[in-house]
Image 1: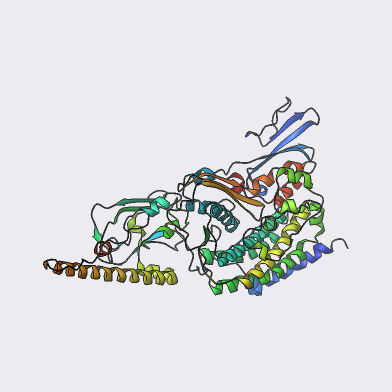
Image 2: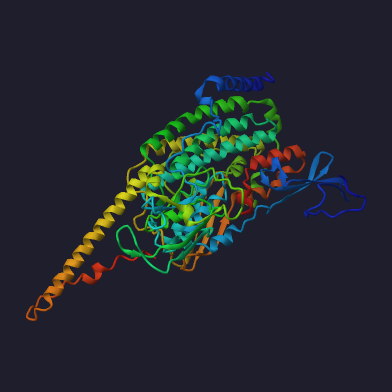
Length: 392
Length: 218
């Protein structure tokens, strides 16, 4: 497959041979390997063009856009309510929190109030979603490490229980379409709440089992500790958020900083890493799941009775007054924000998503330099991207 | 000791492996075509149109072709054409009906927005999920004949929601019938009162308002 690479070839991201020789005046003869877009380790249709010196990566270019579906422009051509189901498809693993972020931005724009019960329900859904996302991430990370599916299936077994709860509540496993401007769509029955509460109470047992299985595993430690280090200066400069930033030791959690929703009423801690390597990023997810369980237990205990929709909320003919708003929340992957400009018409004039996956992906090269291509797969897995959100 | 972490992990795997034969908590697989899990009541797949009468589904659709769902549908998979004539609905009022009502299920994303915006409770979410087709166009384009399903079917798949909807509709129809009766009585009274020139009693004011049904919110 190696091309006729005697002549110096410029570094290019254009489609071409998957492997070719390039010449660099500092490194000499190098090999350019194009991984993806159809590669199982790239978590979707994503391509990494890695230039290798022997085994080491000297240059890495992420190439994305294969899943671009014009999300922002479509949203500008539908009503405000009409783009709610499209937000499910952004980050298809955590539709509940994406819905909430969008509802938060629209509520800021229109000045709607949210009833107390709906606020609690939103927190319950967002934290369940965080558990779903982190369970997936941890499973896939081990898959990237080469554990051939066992940890992934254990994690998916637990995730499936939460997804079933979402299905019995909202009607769909992943495309929940649950939040509305001024509240939530369906009120959970007492049986649903009881089932969810039992599930959450049993979740730490699964985490303990999972950690016994994997956290102390010597192969895993060798493969993740010191791999893909990201220092806090770089992370802050690039606008990295979420667990990837906190693994580098920067204490920034929008649940604490913005105090949106009813989060100030909850007692929870923000886990922080100190090395910023892949192992810290893995531990961050495990610890966040444990904190989410604490938040959920408090929420189930304190959930008040009452309406779940603002009585003034309109389903048809919703026209917020002219203005602009930016609503953001701490999604499972980082700062998830929606920026909206309204000109008083039923459609947003401008609709912009701040996707945490895309912005966290920008430092992939920094993290991968000097490591092998096998490590770059693990590093990519630890950043936690969803291509639906990266490409939009 | 080096390797103890791996051994501990293998112990967990062994526990899960043995458990997968006898512990119901670890037996999670369902052999799908033979076995099926229960569908939750809230589950939704594609929309269908509710008809009042199972014998004459086309004549008893609740839909009055107001085209709100067509406008609100995010991927725009609903195509409606209004009828030229009118038919009496369940309450006996003359209404338009959809001459064409198509839903392209290859475009539909099952978001339920059409159900939420419908002011007449005439479109609801179905629960069918084995909908494979052998042809891409006509088989996936559901016409109103294929979309119409009787109200009893709706009760069967969403019992709680259907009972609530039926209660609301009956109450609305009763209120409308009483209002029409009151309006007719007032009209008769006004007609009776008119020939009496000497009468100074003002005609009942809300006649005009009572005759008009509330327009659907735009």
